[in-house]
Image 1 (cartoon, rainbow, N blue to C red):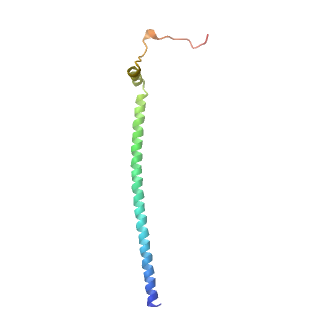
Image 2: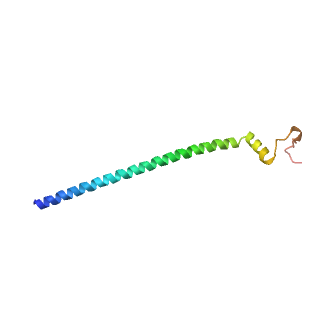
Image 3: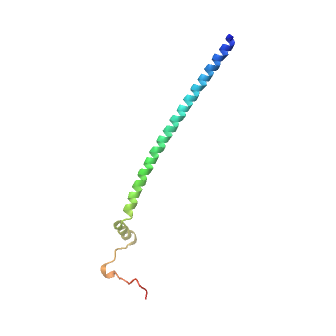
Length: 94
């Protein structure tokens, strides 16, 4: 093998080695970016789950009778009927 051919092989090997290192570095940086994005999305998902739980608790409170009665009185001027205002009818038709 001549010195020129040997030099060509060395240059080719160094070029391939540099290309392999470049690919590894690119892959690692891409992986790091992907992991950072996954962490950000995981945090956003946790915040959304907390907000959902808070809204569910609020909804439960809004569905309870004491709140509904109070709001009906405040917004619409309604009140629960007094005993003498109650009228019971039979369920059958006449």
